[in-house]
Length: 517
Image (cartoon, rainbow, N blue to C red; front, side, top):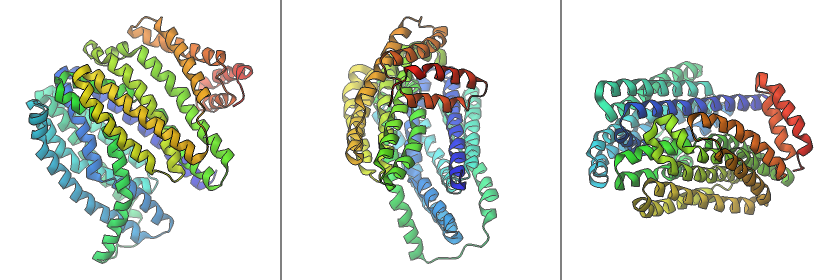
């Protein structure tokens, strides 16, 4: 393996670990606060989360991605002066944007909490979101630098400080009676500690390696760098904002039309529904460079294989996960968050189907980006946000949180279809509809079998075992198991330690039932 391949493989593995840790930390945060706060208070906290996400992206202006790109580029060219200048100029931009973002958030808190939502209890938590912004964008800046230098472990360390600080301080502040404001303040301190750790790591791993001091540049030269950074970061921030809005628009309308406890039910249902996206994001990370490589080699056969594999692996894993989650939605919510949160059961059942559509969209978008055609996925995402806004406005008053879930699923289905069609157009590779239908049939057979399992907490674990067995047999029955699927089992087995023998034996036995791709 070449140095570059080794570097990418190592970095991807570290980031995958980081993603799982971040998800686990996020769930631990939700789990603890769900039990410490009333449903109404937790709903208020849930209403602040979209603004935290929205503000973090807008205030950073997409600069972390631009920093990573240009730091890596100038590092490869061994241009130390430009590396330093990109970092310094980015810091100036991000401080200004953080100040503007925090000020705007503070000013709009009252019109939103009182004027739109009619929830005075949401005012102080929303105002405290403004305090998060400076620390979160500073962390984002340093993470962009670490990514540019392939210092993925440093990113992981800052995420650990963020998660630990956020959970610990939120729990302490809630326990002493500060309720929702204490939970948000815990997030503030989490980002503060992450910022301090990022500054220390930056001095240890980045500035200490610079061999020369920074030279002064003219104002016009610095403006050129600002323009260069913003030209790259603006499309990134538009896409990021659209994605956040696609997740969270429904929550905003729930705040406007329903009592705050419903926002709590929906927030947790949405968090569970997004879990399968871990799979699609991991595959999408590989799909983009793979498609780019095949396209640059003008190798259509290789491109076809990469596209089919990307779609198949995601659908093969995510579709049965979504069906299983829909079947056991009520006991999952009850087990994790308490019986009251089972009122989000139907919303979760609708949302998981929407997240399946979003998972497929993620693959299509990554492929088209790898082919150098990123505009249509971005436009479709923006149109999806508009569609969701309209449907949320219409459906939330009629169907409460189920209306928000339905609006999300309609919009994600739209962007999925648009991007599948566009991917076929630019790549010349057709989506394998029959293969998808076979996986769908196997998943539905699995779902029907799981319906017979009691919907209890222990039933979740019984259903997991039954579901896996029935799903494999159903794939064989509908002739949906392909030989490439077994290669995936063999590769997975290599990383499972003592389970390797059993997985290899399973794949060996399935060989005679697998069909050609």
